[in-house]
Length: 303
Image (cartoon, rainbow, N blue to C red; front, side):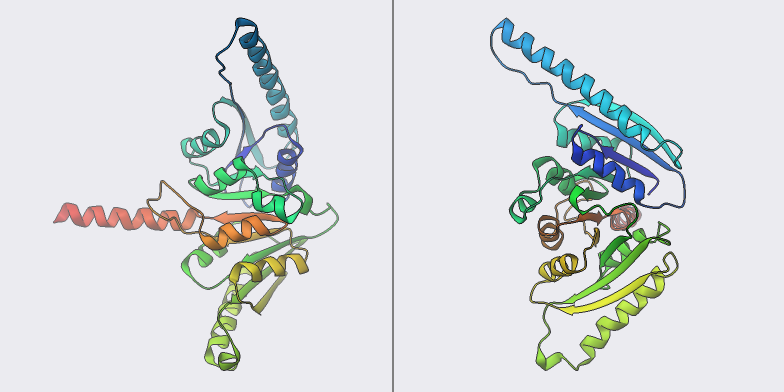
């Protein structure tokens, strides 16, 4: 997490997203790019109508600039190098393209939605960014941000698979000591009484123990949880709700070429159902795909 893009739109959600990101610890200095996108609307109409539209656009630009300045002030004195940029274009697509241009490690975007129905709708921009960003994405829900005096509760969904291990390693890039609780959750979606005493359960618990050992390198509060549920996403969602989790971390696999991404069924379900912020990690899986493609190209060239 060295190169971060934070999307700003002047709303309370984006300001709270900035405050939440400021609470995430980091070892090294962070290059933070604040981006606000203004969409110029084109309407076929009279001269007076276009003049009003142009005035509205200029007002949007001024509001965006003030918002960028206000958010930049939040990071005064922090180990963060901030630069701000105002972009004209379609909001979601512009954010994703900017993430590609600056080779961002993480895109941070605010989301709205307090009720279960509105959480499922999420929001067109945050949904688009989460789905298409070429790197890890942090979608922040303001209502789940803890008070400064309260600990930050983080939940890692862990199965021992490649994406989950990659998520764990990305989590280890930050020092989580102090007022942070890390919870590692493994959900067995297919267990029944027939397998309750089998080696299958022990396998899950062994993986959790290994994950805990790794995370204790960066945290002094790591707790593991083995739960059974008919659906992995529902199991994670219920755990989040009953333990007042503030942030869920999930591993995501690129679905096609590493330049194009689609949310998997689990991450999509969790993103739309949990009441807290969601960090979808992709970076290490992307690097792995690039390495494989590079090796494949090298072999093809030799042949």
